[in-house]
Image 1: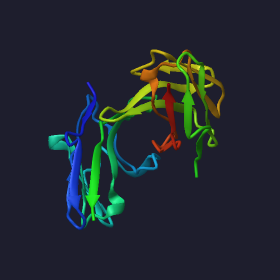
Image 2: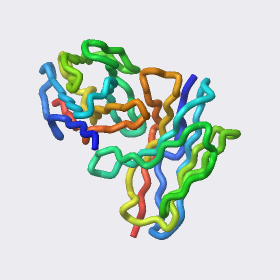
Image 3: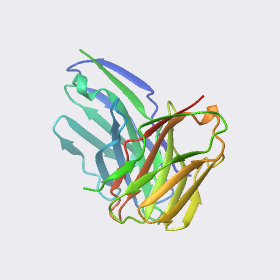
Image 4: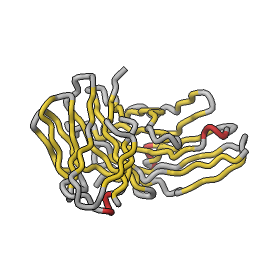
Length: 116
Length: 111
């Protein structure tokens, strides 16, 4: 069965600290996409990254980095030198490429609070 | 850029009312989705549609129906609103390259 688990319900850190958000997934397929989305207090979901299951290279975008480990079925997200504007709910999601309906399976989200 | 527009940002309705949530996309995408978002539960799929007049139930369809008469518009209908349907509702569409686009959401309160 497909499932995405974000075990951390809420994380609170002080500005400038590094923080890692965990994401563990389960899927029956060998080909899939993994996503991270950010939802700031305004409510709109903001796309952060999409990763194909064939590409296990880690990715860095500014202060954001993602660690994809197929062996542990994890796709963790790290924010370096966090800022108050990073405060949001972050969602990890999975889409199986064999699913012709393009459905997304979502984690429950991690609320990140960055204190000044 | 793909745009997904949800007609209302905030909505307050009374118990028992019939409620329509509208979603319009401008990219000619075939697949559209309605999600409900509640704290600690993430996004749960209510219904999706892969073509005009085609619809499929998601994980939590009870109490909801949908309509897709035109490709660009996907409506979510609460036949008789109840207080447990107070939630944030998100519409989304997806292109062939797995590029998902979400509307800004409708925060519905049923009193």
